[in-house]
Length: 257
Image 1 (tube, rainbow, N blue to C red):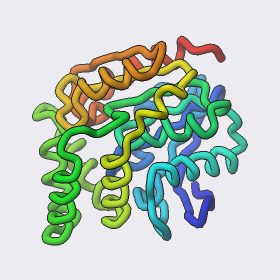
Image 2: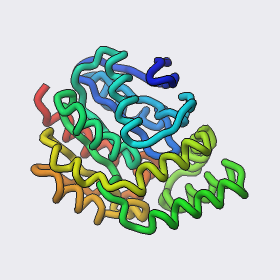
Image 3: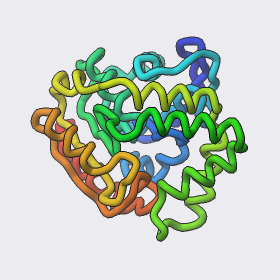
């Protein structure tokens, strides 16, 4: 399904009934990668996932930064008549969730922040420069293969590896680089003190992209937040969907309806 917001056409899925849960995907992802979570929750929640502009099957007519991502989320929820939701932000979705909460706190039932950060403090500029260089000399599929090799565990099924490669190939290269600059350079720490909603901070123990220390910092910055470490890498949604789902489901089911 598609909706038009802020000059873009966003692809989205909406399934289930009950309180809304909104999923914000990681860099290079799209709505399909939330299918296991939607299947586990749709009997008691209205599950919504958007393709961010420039990713999956959404358009990319303008530029991207985190405030723009938050505005797209607000416009998308308004278009779907969603007044309040549990927000689940994965990697790049984390800063979007934090900024969205700062701007529209009354719309946030809870936050789940997965393998993400308030400030990316590890070689940000070097990573951006390396990605720019790769995109100049590599095809999207070659870049995706290289990316996947550093994000998934050796035990991750080949079918999941191939799925992630194909998902990354759907992304606009310009959008991809906009996102890298938009999430790696700014400091989102100021938004953490504004979080009043119940918050789960979750991270894979073997995550080398946004290591556990980043989640530890988030937990310290967000008053009352709880932290769960699971036996996965940065993309636990592929490494081990069952281990990935467990803390999310337990956290959401513990919230008032």
